[in-house]
Length: 138
Image 1 (cartoon, helix red, strand yellow):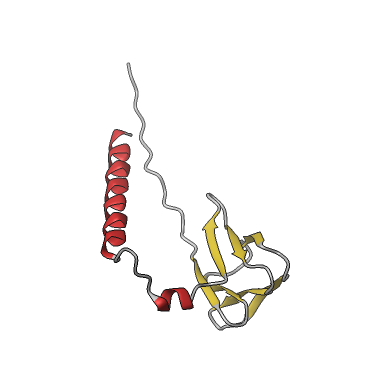
Image 2 (cartoon, rainbow, N blue to C red):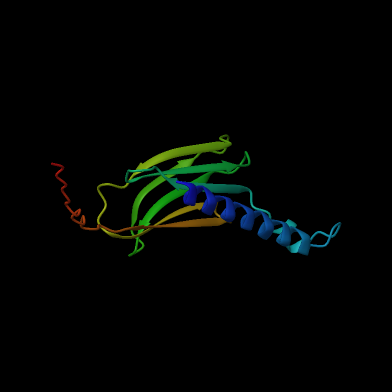
């Protein structure tokens, strides 16, 4: 347990130094025009629900443009499609992928001009037999 806490602390400190190094390398007061010109009108977050075959997709967007959310397989066939209305500012949905076969899948979120893709890889692993040990005290 102590080793896990120590490893987490080291990773956290390394992450903070990496973030501060990146932030320090950008000049103060100067904004890159290409970054502001290509600012996204929506953002997507996605994470797996622990111990399940479910994925949460979270979208935050500006009001006024509809979004298309599609799930496609590796042959680019649409498995699922949904439209988020123009008036909605936030959207979240839990996708249950338990019925899908192994392979690569892609969530595409688009407003017609911008596209954000998130890939999901499904693999079935055979369970490994646990080593059986016994002990007898006499």
